[in-house]
Amino acid sequence: MSHNTIDQSISFLDNELQRLDISELSITFFGGEPLIEKDKIFYIIDAFEQRADLTVSYRMSTNGTMLTADLMQRLYSKGVFISLSIDGHPDVHDAHRVDAGGKPTSHKVEQASKIMLQYNPATNVTCVISPDTASQLCESVDYIYNLGFRYITTTLDYSADWGLEHFAMLKKSYQKLAKWYLQKMDRNERFYLSFFDERIRSRTHKPISAHERCLIGVKQFSIAPNGELYPCIQFVKTHSLPEFMIGHVTEGFDEACKTHLHQQSEKEKPECAGCKLESRCSKWCSCINFMSTGRIDKASPIVCYNEKILIEIVDRTADKLWKKRNNHFIHKHYNEDYQVISHFEITL
Image (tube, rainbow, N blue to C red):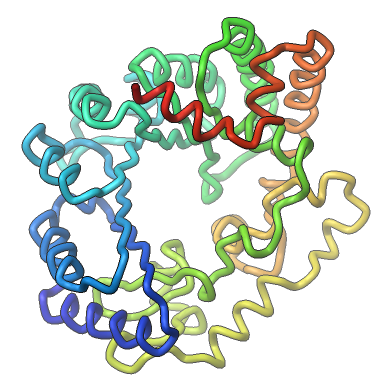
């Protein structure tokens, strides 16, 4: 993104904040690798620091290959919350994450891990599972855990070509991961594993409501390097599909397009009719649906197949912990203050 487009984007955001009378803003820096443009990141932060009437939070996802102790200290001083991408142990990680020269990056990520945990013990790791790494899921989660991370967000690569043979391997991995989860809970260890904890939450609490969801183009939007506006980061790559462009920083939003996309994404999914798990899955995520099907009004079959496998295993795991009256399980999933308490226990 050029400096001119950055300035136009800042001006656009200022106008929108004033128009909507909003005093809070959350900015997430994405890439590629956002730290390639670290000077521009700090330029943006410095620009918003001058606005005394505005509270801004910053987030960033990095692959860790460019992170140094000095850079981390500078980001930390600016209040940037950083998430690290680690797909698993070195063999798994290096299968898909290499540098521009095709060389492995796992050794750089391990170095970045030490730096990030020093500044924030509650750093989140995003672990992406691909069809060819599905059999190594449990080992990869354990590796990340042993690096010192206690917040692990696991997700499938929904753009990949998943077959039944891959889901068969994934099911075995989920079964191994269930044993891992039980062991950690029995030891009263504090951690968050999205694959299990989010699905337990979907059972112990009410289904996720509309105001908790991203609502593409409504609660969030993405600015492309050329200033084009899109409903979410996954759509920035859709230059050949102009129907997903919801405006430009120099012209503002195309409200008709925003409304149309929102209505399309919120349509009932007939393929989900009658499914007992409908309220517990992520059929509402337009980004996942788009990556998997090329449409935002059609539920992803990958999500469907995965949730049916995973929820059964997670529910069985939760039942075992409930029957044992595992104190940590009850505290974790029924105490509304657990997240805050756990965060302090991990960081202190």
